[in-house]
Image (cartoon, rainbow, N blue to C red; front, side, top):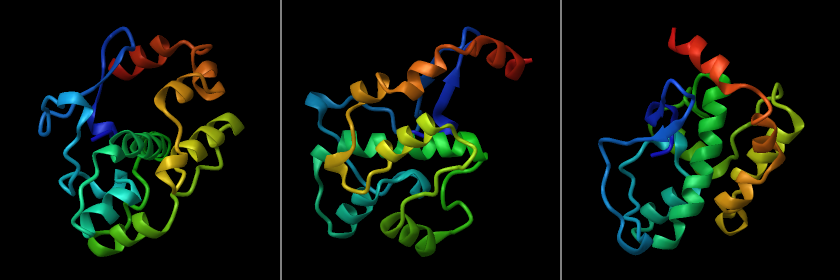
Length: 153
C-alpha cells in the first residue's frame, strides 16, 4: 500500500516505500489485487473489481498512481481523503467521488494531483510522466534535507 505509514525517510532525505505486512515478490509484474488494503487510499476501480469478484493484473500501476495522489493529500492535510467516513460510507465515497484537492497547494501541485486522481485508470499517467512533471521538478529546488533534519530532531 502506498500511504504515509509505509514511507521511510533516512537522515539524507531518501524516501523508501515499505509495507512489511504485504511484502512479497511479484513475478513478471503480476499483482494480486484485493481488498486487503486501506480503503482511504484505494482506487475506485480496485473496489469495483473486488465487488464484481474479477481480478485484473493490469490495474496494478494505475492503482498505485491513485494511491500516490491520496498520499500527497494525506501529507498536506494530516489525514487521507474520506477519513471522516467509516465502513460502507468510506467505500461509497471512494467509488463515487474524487478526493478534494487542497486549495493551499500550488497550481503545479493541483495539476499533479488531478493527473493522479483521474477516475478512469487508463487516463492516469505512468510514473515516468509524473517524475518529469513540473511539481516534482520544482521540489528539487527546495532543500529536502533541512526539512528532514528538522523532523528527525
